[in-house]
Image (cartoon, rainbow, N blue to C red):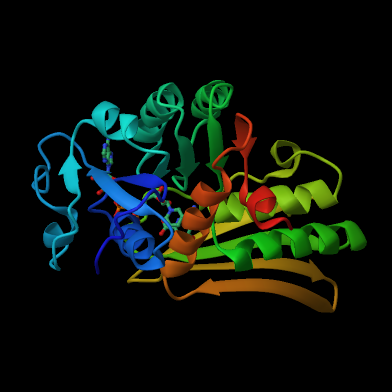
Length: 273
Ligand SMILES: NC(=O)C1=CN([C@@H]2O[C@H](COP(=O)(O)OP(=O)(O)OC[C@H]3O[C@@H](n4cnc5c(N)ncnc54)[C@H](O)[C@@H]3O)[C@@H](O)[C@H]2O)C=CC1
Ligand SMILES: O=C(O)C1=N[C@H](C(=O)O)C[C@H](O)C1
């Protein structure tokens, strides 16, 4: 891997040592369409001060890992952020001050976090999606269409599976798919979502949308939207086998966002779906 010396957009990756952080670093550098200028990690992290490339076990890239996002963002045109909700909310304020395009892949936000992201997006471009892959974003479109076409005789369930290290449930993708199904039914997801089931739950409520989560091994990300009626079932499925699909989407988003008006966008906007 080597970096082009040019006027390509400078990108900072937060959570650089993470599963997605490392995949994003490779994707940005290999693309030749952007320059990786810094990686951000938590204070005290073992990678701070090291070259990103050597910290990842490869050749040097001429970009360092830092715990100072303010200084790094000041030199950047874009920030790609797959970290954790509290970190992302803080980065959103800093990215907006630096007028960087902030691409957010982080999942697991509370409503109060989302309000803070919305506030940051008044000053800068923010692109956020619980899943950045082309396949899942296409699946949200299909899910909405199928939910529109099938009436409440068809029960909707979203089932997701992820690796053992995932900390949030349901996944961001499952919620995107649930929202798409609810849109198809003409109501907000909060009105249709069934709480996680355990014990004597009673029979299923007509029109409800249910969620189930499996955690194990190294599963990258699998999602089924099940439409179940008496005597038949329709299942829409996406299987990710490589995190590169998320990183490619994030790179596309940060390039797409350059020069756009401040505001909050998603991958449907980026991909034009
Ligand atoms: N939208 C999408 O397409 C995708 C979203 N994700 C989401 O991205 C997030 C990260 O996933 P992974 O990479 O698997 O997790 P990970 O745990 O491997 O990486 C997270 C990284 O963020 C760093 N971090 C946490 N707080 C920080 C802070 N305050 N400052 C700097 N760095 C900080 C951690 O040290 C770690 O290196 C999760 O919320 C996950 O659900 C993951 C894959 C695809
Ligand atoms: O944590 C992960 O790994 C993933 N998180 C995202 C989610 O919550 O949906 C996207 C992808 O499924 C992988």
